[in-house]
Image 1 (cartoon, rainbow, N blue to C red):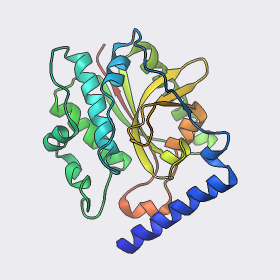
Image 2: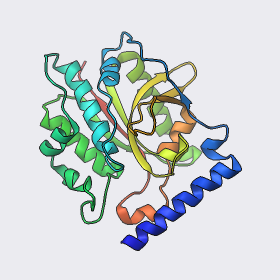
Image 3: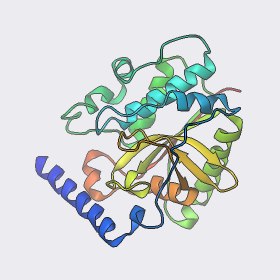
Length: 253
C-alpha cells in the first residue's frame, strides 16, 4: 500500500511540474478567475446561506466533510429558519456514520481508503440530509460522461440545473472533480459545492473548500464539465475512484 501511494504521488507531481514547465493546463489559458471581492447578498436566500456557511476542510482528505456541512447548514437555514448554531464538521462526522465516513477521514482511512468516490459521496450526502431531517423534493447522483455524443443530455440537464440554482434558489449542486482541471494544483479527486452561475457567460463559480484556495473562483462551463467528467487516473482505481460527476439536491418549493 505504501509503495502504491508513493508511486501515485510521484506521478501526480511529475504531471504537475510538466504542466507548470510547459505552461499548459491551468498554467495556460484555462486558468480559474478568482473572485477576491466580498460576496454581496442577492435575492437568492439559499445562495446567500451557502456563502455564509462555506467552510474549509480540516485536512487534505476531508473535502467531503466541509462540502456537505456547508450545504447542510445552508439548507437548514433555508428550510428551517430558526436560530441555531451551525453544525460543525466534527459534529456531522460523529452523527452520520454511513459508509464509514469518519474512518475514511482518519490517517489510515477505512481499509486503506481515504476520501469519498462519487457514489459514496452520494450515500453520505443523502444520509446527512436524513439525519438532520431536511426535506427534499429530489436527489440524484450524476456520473458525468466524456465524449460529445455521450455527454450531450447530461450537459444539457446540468446547464438547466445550474441556472435553476442561480435564479430559483431551490437546489444545490456538489461537484466531484479533478482539482487540477480548475486550479494550479495536483490532478486529484476533489469535492466542493457550486456557488454560482452566470447564464449569460455560462461561467460557473466554485466555493472550493481547499484552504489553499482563499477565494471562490469562476471557470467556463466547458472547463467545469471537463473537470467533473474526468476519469481519474488508473492509480486511483485501487481506492475506488472512477469518473467524477455531481450530486443534485432539489428542495421543496
